[in-house]
Length: 184
Image 1 (cartoon, one colour):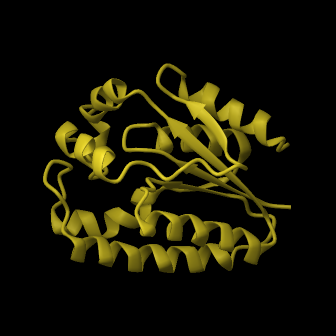
Image 2 (cartoon, helix red, strand yellow; image 1 turned 90 degrees about the vertical axis):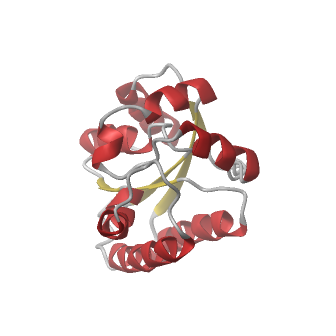
Image 3 (cartoon, helix red, strand yellow; image 1 turned 60 degrees about the vertical axis):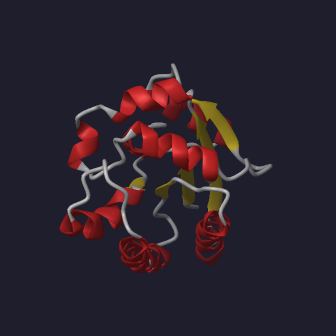
């Protein structure tokens, strides 16, 4: 039986990095949010410093919808990892439900993982060079504003919570496997 791991956290919390380690550990396919976003963000010229307009986000949502449909068509034994920055806005709850519904449609186990990280550590990570390669947020002021105005979607009761402030990505991936009880 397949699994869908859903790594949720703010920019800089380690979603992609932990997802890469989890993928290597389990053989699970990583479908990082920037796999979908960058198809639109890169042509737009996103640099991680200036805000991205809503119409560009709407185009990224169309790409994400196509990616979710392709994921739905995957064989049941194919496990997937999705990464998301979900806010308290209605779109955050809707995006969470889309991935939950995907797991249900595929008849695979849904494993939500909430990644927390200290704000000072998040800001430090925003300056890492690999963030520019993937058009990721790099402006600490935008991060603080986003967290202050939109927050992070509340932790669901079935979620695994991991503080990544001082935890190595490989250790976080091991914790996810241990806490979820998945064997590969």
